[in-house]
Amino acid sequence: MIKIGVIGAGHLGKIHIKLLKEIDKYELVGFYDASPEATLLVEKEFGIKHFETIEGLLAVVDAVDIVTPTFAHYECASKSIRNSKHVFIEKPITNTIEEAKSLIQLSKEANVKVQVGHVERFNPAFLAARDYCSSPMFIETHRLAQFNPRGTDVSVVLDLMIHDIDVILSVVKSNIKRISASGVAVVSDSPDIANARIEFDNGCVANLTASRISMKNMRKSRFFQKDAYISVDFLDKKVDVIRLKNIDGEADPLAVTIDLGPGKGSKQIYFENPKTQSTNAIKMELEMFAESIMNNTTPIVSADDGYKALDVAYRIIEKMRVTADKSEFSSMTNE
Image (cartoon, rainbow, N blue to C red; front, side, top):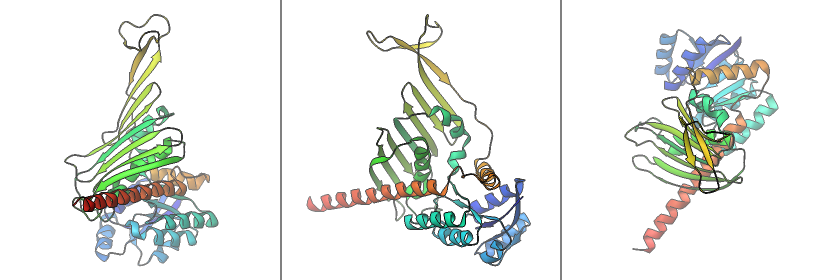
């Protein structure tokens, strides 16, 4: 069993603690949290030991699960890695690109595993749809959430959109050619709604929208490729696949067909609803982290993956800033 400790026992940290206790690959040794109030509540609720310092926790574990606010990710992770501990770290990997680069270098030098908590990779709907997304050429994502003060210390890009950035980078195997973006701060000091367009060298285009001031929650992605359309509902865990196939011989009179025009023949339309497994995505990512340690394999969502998603997120944020500056300048010159 892998001896693991949790650093950070807030809302999400408590979920991780509960799930780690259920995974037989782990022995949950204890946790550390900077808040005395949170420490007392968690210790009482879960009956696990709390440590007065991170160093004390690191001295008795093989791995740590870091579920702190983003600004503390680097300090906690770098300290853990320097103590030769494997690290699971919530998304985004760090607060800055420079910190992410440093963590990657440290993990290579220490020869430890680092997995980033981009949990949508383990969403049952995405797992069911993954094999269908062979070569998407247009992707559209909507991640909308009702307002919640928690998380508003950062842009909606780092808070919500980064989930879709990571998913897109995992299915599009091409370099990014161009990014354009715009966003608006409505109730926070940073953008609450944002739209980004990512163009890849292979011709694929991804259009992403994220909002944390929506009247309803939505987490949907649509993938379009040659002869196929895949819709993934991350919230309701549903997948719809529509595929076009050539008609060989006589067409099925009960099947739906589409006429492609003079001289182009027809194709049959197939509707599929791949079954999704009833799995807990957070629990699964923690289980896969254990597997990577025990089997000495690269985590499914590696530190490199976390860095790439963060890099694109900050490129989008910079594009939003430039767009806002241009808009402000145009407004001033037209007065």
